[in-house]
Length: 104
Image (tube, rainbow, N blue to C red; front, side, top):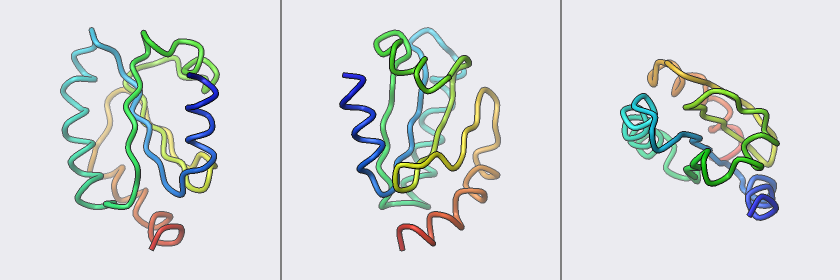
């Protein structure tokens, strides 16, 4: 599965990875807010949710040590990484310019 996920990162024009865990209350609370905001602001960006328990090897290869972690890729390159408590609105503001450049 790790190779498939890495391939997905490399081939996607715009991709948001949400890495969380089943037993993480912050992950559960933040996920709906983030996905809704990304759907509204970045409709052409793919979204992928990764459970740290099911994909330990993949997550460790990304050097993710805290959940939740959100990573945004454009054309296979990491542009943004946010972890733990974050402002969804501020994160949307940061992603807006590269999204416009790479996707629209």
